[in-house]
Image (tube, rainbow over all chains, first blue to last red; front, top):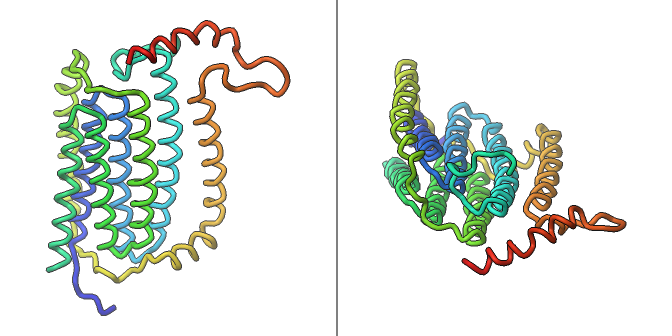
Length: 105
Length: 193
């Protein structure tokens, strides 16, 4: 270990928390279904940052492998979710979540 | 010192992009600011020594997933979101709720805080090391993930295809009658845009 430069762990946690809170806020106040979906991706990114920071803190590489799995699940979720958005738009012709209040037309 | 400056630089870009996502009303602007967030997060990962994760972040997240988002935005011709009664209620209830929740979490963090530091470059997340871990210790989750991806691909194709586009092996297309009913409407709706 020749490295001596350090960054406090709370810095990373605070940044990750800010990203997560921005994601939650966007999820709650946005009305466009695509923007809501992007807020979910923002939350996942915030969690990934804390995973990597803790991996560096505890000297365990498992955290980085978990980030890999989170990314895979996020990619699958994005593919299926955007397909659902396309299906919703095809039947209702709106992207506003306030107007999508019925499961079945 | 240089590391701290780089952390602050990427962190500020990151937070600015996240706030911009909240402020912008057009989805395409939100998508582009999300790309900025993801690219600067890749810089943070590089600072932490996670080379593989940084590369994957740029390739998969900022590349593939965001292209999927932008493609959908263009496909659906998404315009600016309109302010409705629901959005006012959401802002009135959502902002204080999130503020209280994040204050609680921050208070818990600070109460149990130990001012430990992350040493830079102490842990190397290069592709070789990650691959050894991924294909030995995490082999079963890795294989299960491939099944998940396969199911997601099939689900996306089934959900996004037009009703009636999927043909059974023998005979009529699924819900052929519905397609006849809805077909002209969809064409007319497409011409309006």
